[in-house]
Length: 84
Image (cartoon, rainbow, N blue to C red; front, side, top):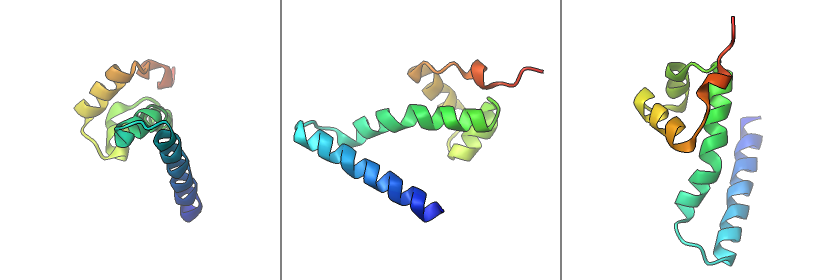
């Protein structure tokens, strides 16, 4: 299962690479991160019910770094919290 996910991700990155190279775009790494980072953070916030400390740990980054990325990307972190 993990190998299947890794293969899907690899194929997606290869396709993105071809897209950027065809358009002679530079900074491929930056552009791929821009495409992947937002949905990744949103997915992890959803899995952790909006708990940024747990999300940061799952992502392997500092909580302050996650908070800065959420702010930069304009993600509404509150929408992932469970209302009690």
